[in-house]
Image (cartoon, rainbow, N blue to C red; front, side, top):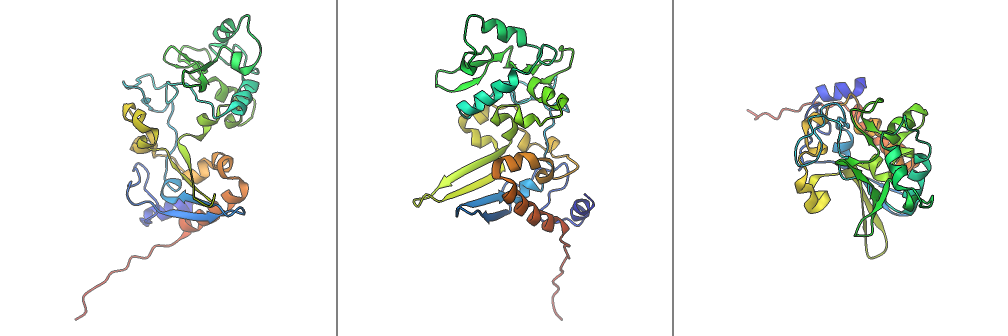
Length: 271
């Protein structure tokens, strides 16, 4: 931490000071090859930034109008499941939730009456016309989002229950809920070789829907106030994307950047 602070004070070119959004046009990247011959490109500028989630700490949400309750965050559209395994794994943890954990457990169970016990038949999940499965939206947000009038307070029921069980929230929630705002973008060439980009989700990455967001955290200075950089605070999430070996190689290089001494050079006119 002291090294990072020192680097910021030295105005290190790869480290954005707290409270500032990294310049969109001047990001530095690190390339790491894996054992399969694929290339992983890491956005150093983002990973060394002070970004962090500010849910409940001033987040106005992404809906059309600002959320003055600061309790909806990016949960207003429900969570889209990556695949059937993602939904099954979430369902396995949903079954551990009690009524104290989850404000709308009774509602989900009521909608499940007379149905089976498969995840696809559970009252908290719904299938869209596009064929995609998501968590159900109830009263303007994900059904797993406890509102401010819940005795246990506002927040994701799965996230809170995981913490009370001394487990990682990312193991309980749909994949998209722990991945965002880190984005893994895979490009495959004609020889089936992948180049994988690890970066922040930007508004334009959501397509036309991104234009409808009232606010998007990765482009706002209020969200760049963490005490430590992203590659430290999001270690578990990054390992979830790339694995422990690649993360270790990445962290070693980022640690070295943070420890670098920047010496100003003045070029004067010779007499």
